Image 1: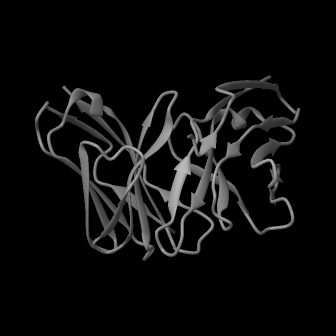
Image 2: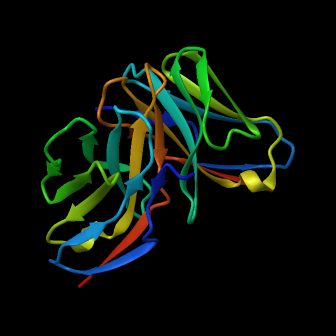
Length: 116
Length: 112
């Protein structure tokens, strides 16, 4: 079974509008972390936002927020006021595991295109 | 400034060759990871290491091995390269309790 599922291979959004990128995860661990990364066409991986499984508040970082619904095992990324520079591949990831052996698993990604 | 450095950006190797991909981090991180990235498949974990000489298989370890003799260096080894191992390879590292994994610039490997 997939540990991280991103069901939207591609998304389009109009500049200045908000967009939600979906992510669902599967784990039996009680303690885990959820991440979103951005990969522009240059190929670098840029960390955007983190949510811990015990965090009660949804994480926010500037225009990025993570809509964490623990019971539904979803961790959707919301980008407000989209900009042309937001066009990129976006990956959801989960860190799980016990002790020091903590695996970091990624989804298949969503290609976001922001339209002028 | 944190840094994860992969030894090559581009590499071309012949089928059957033994290939070494090197990754070095300067942040004293415990955890290091090797991924391959293919279109439509995202990043797939090959191996990870949580300490010197300690390693765990990821989702697609077949055809690969790893070595971590020093904390800062994590090597990915293709014992006998095959064309289906043509891919982008990404190395990452993170501290045990950190919120972020840091990535290298990637190595695009072509096996001909």
